[in-house]
Image 1 (tube, rainbow, N blue to C red):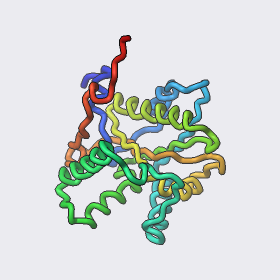
Image 2: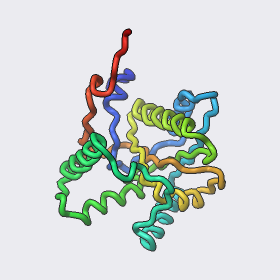
Image 3: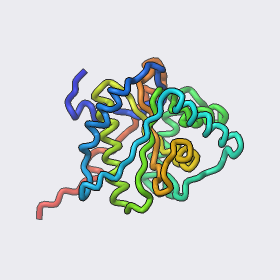
Amino acid sequence: MSSSFSDIARRRISTRAFLDTPVSEAEIRDILDTARWAASGGNLQPWTVHVVTGQARQRIIDTVRMRLEVDPFGDENDFGAYPKSLWEPFRTRRHALGEQMYETMGIDRDNKPARLNHLLKNFEFFGAPVGLFFSLDARMNPNQWGHLGMFIMCVMLAAEEKGLATCAQEAWMTRWKTVGAAIGLSPEERIWCGMALGHADPDAAVNTLRSERDAVDSFTTFLEH
């Protein structure tokens, strides 16, 4: 398998079904050691990472599951993952991805229980043996959120280079306070997202999904004068 940057970036997807094959702490450390060189304005390096495996991972899953049972529609997030009313072309892009994903899995539009069940798998890391939570000091500005995003992207690409799969999961934002308490997050820290890390299940239909991307000319303007 080619390891050029272009190939790694192009083959990365959001993996939503994992094998239970373990990932060693040494592998995780190596991924983070690469990602720490991500661009960071003023070299603030605003990111914090909590890695959960084994019993700690299961404790997080069980804790959030109990919260979901008590309050299934609760949202601990004080700002949405998306604007409340998406406009075009963003609304269509998001809707199309969801429909493509469920179609790939053979789940009909009217099968609400099956769709919900798949959504809830977010809170099990889609079966991945490793979960990561990315956070930063809540007093940081939007610029530092951007720096954290660049770091997260580096984590995903470094994992891909190793033959591992990832899925960045904003779903955890809806339970970030519950997770924060469970992992001992300081009061100043705010979780942005979680991430599933592991070996992709090659037989899972959902892992064949490759989202469509616009051509360069649709989002780029070249100015020469």
